[in-house]
Figure 1 (cartoon, helix red, strand yellow):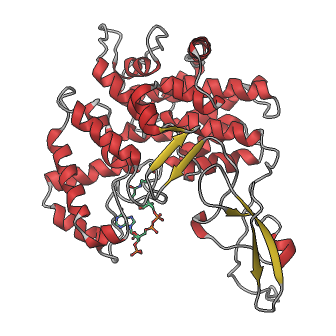
Figure 2: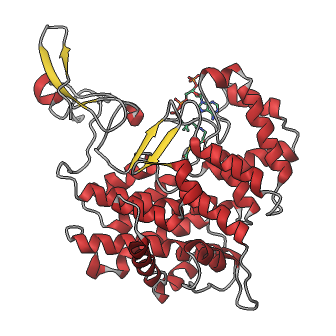
Length: 426
Ligand code: ACO
């Protein structure tokens, strides 16, 4: 990868040399797998901010310049010119499909859109008021119990069919989580419409009347799904890789990723953003008091939808979504006052030293909730939508990991700070 080396010298004067690995883009990485052997030390990096955990050819992010590439293609171009299913093919296979490859892929996904009838019973077993993410994490994990015959992780065909099943069935399961919550009958998938239209139909159609598609809404959701399809080694993707590194089956590994996504510091932030905006809109909170709380180190509150571990100037996905909000709110009869409030809040942070100095800008979640509300998607389904779109990213990383010759079980080390060895009292 590069001839560059780096030498570490400890306080006793002992030097050890390490290779510097260079990817296609991005900074070099010091290869430290033999650090302990050479120096007798481990590294300490809470939150893994300076640690590369794998080599990956799927997604590249440059946080300083706000660049996001999938298999080399900029997210702006994919959002404008591609479809969600085409991006799925790209992430899984490394190249854009030609038209016959796309038709074959689309047909394959369509053959897997239905779920076993027992899944309906499984979902019906949840309490009527269960959070849809609780149902999703449980049901995706439960899929392992339906496919004993095809979850051999050492069989490349099994791995691919599991990937296709997950991409195809997530919309069906996600819509069932919603229907159970609403007390409405589950709708079967309809393979005559697009992937995104099928999802909306399963969400919003009822058997009593014909469902009419709204092309503006379908297009908005298609773009949202593309923007959430992958984002390299974030918490949930790293969780999928770590869970999968022990040899866990793909359904269990993706369920682990869904659990990680659920947290408000990750995928749960879009729900938290709307709560925060509603709080400003409906209660005595103002933009000023909200910002003051976010800056107060004695208050755990953070401005939701702001900040990112990697993006330090802007999140390119947030830019696209903000543009989408502008275009679509009128058409979709969306919540214009809420969007205006979001714009005001963004403007106030841009003028505030605290946010400028820490380089905290709106992330993808800041505007995605506003679009989803305009699509009539209830708030507790927001993170489910994110999980549905991200499943292709997770499974692409899981597949890549299983064909990586350097792949081994993930097992970080620690600095032990507990008691020194002591004897049990006699
Ligand atoms: N509001 C107020 N202050 C913040 C915020 C925020 N949203 N985010 C970070 N800060 C401050 C921290 O208090 C810290 O200040 P300090 O240096 O004075 O101690 C500084 O900025 C750096 O913050 P870290 O926590 O070190 O940043 P980190 O990279 O660990 O966290 C994260 C990133 C989790 C996204 C954080 O910015 C956050 O909690 N944001 C709000 C939740 C959110 O929107 N999550 C969605 C992320 S995007 C996604 O998952 C799709």
